Length: 544
Ligand code: 1PR
Image (cartoon, rainbow, N blue to C red; front, side, top):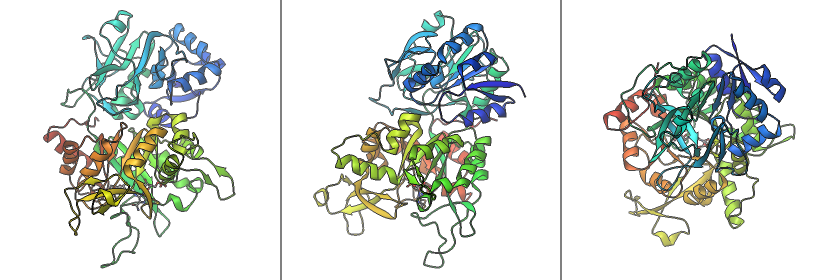
């Protein structure tokens, strides 16, 4: 296999990039010191975390000049995500840290007035010049982006400097999605997470086919994010000791034996095989939740790491892993920080980690301290090191009815679905340990606290709706959407494709997740997307 050199300057998730490079027929060799840069023919700079963190690491390790020299020499260079941002002069994210300065322009933050930030999901990369292709980019394809800062696009400026530019729009902001000049190519999106469309671009770059045009595809030409569909796999060990995909009914995952529950753990299949099936059906992301992680130390939970490793070899869309991400003590007494656990997951192929119980406890402390950020919570530490987009907070709320807002100190909503006593006011109580323990914290308090701590996304479950097949809790979802700027994933209750159309039409949710209806084989992810297209929504169509 021919070799590609990948710059290793900071711990992070580059496993999926290595897998994607292998997939298109190349071997990866790491560049771990500035001296090694010179031996690279094709050099890739993957981007991890913040602009300032990335550039400071590169600078303090002495990489900046060797990278500039590589670029000047005319040998192929590719930057991905923050790797694209690095070739600019600087970023509003860290105004005191200079970039490589190949492009004399500054990056700026997306305006969050009327949209979620970070910008997470599948968007376009349309070439602005009318002639020629660009490393297989297709104006009809969708690519996976995850970032809060971007290079704003102004027609003609970059082109005047000899760059070919592909752009995407987010709300009314147009930004650089990919850019190329001579030996330099950079993408704001992650080709390694963009399914076949991303692999096509990576292959075209590595084989030097700059003018190759895209090869497909889907019918949509509309700008902006597509409706993101996520397949979720709750994983746990069954009574035979095998790691299986299971699915609860209001979080009870045991088979119901006549009227009472308490039978065997529901076994719906094998995690790696099912993740791959959903990827092939067109899932935009796959999430694994290790639902019994609170019982044992995740460090001993090697099968979950193995599941990630194997899944990331064949699934080229973002992978999220949740369960047990908190400061822990290993069985031999070693203290292991949440960041170290997250790092193990990232190294094994996860793109995002999801925090449940620990986020609730951290939010309680945040309010007890008068809304002071300690800097020590798992959310703060992981988002500082890997970027907020890598930190999802998974919430397991329960609906609590009250006679009126005065009956509780918590934030209430008026509901169109009164309880059996006719009470039409309710609040959403946070729980931990998979719904087993109720806490004196409402969902609004939780989401605002974790947003302040640096979480990048909310995975919003609902215990009342889980496994009910009765549709999402639109009231809960819209209430949470109105409380935060970060993206929200609606979860719990999907029973058929029209429930997805309902949640996109009835709320401003950023993504929607399904589990049971996919696992039981009642509907495929493709069925959901077909229905969404039929009802007027834009989705990413999987490419072959
Ligand atoms: O608290 O950080 O260790 O994380 C534990 C994680 O495990 C949390 O994200 C929590 O939501 C999850 N979890 C814990 N117990 C259960 C359980 O089911 N007994 N699963 C559980 C949560 C909810 C969704 C589900 C949707 C969609 N599962 O992920 O997939 O409700 O289901 P549906 O479409 O079939 O209705 P920590």
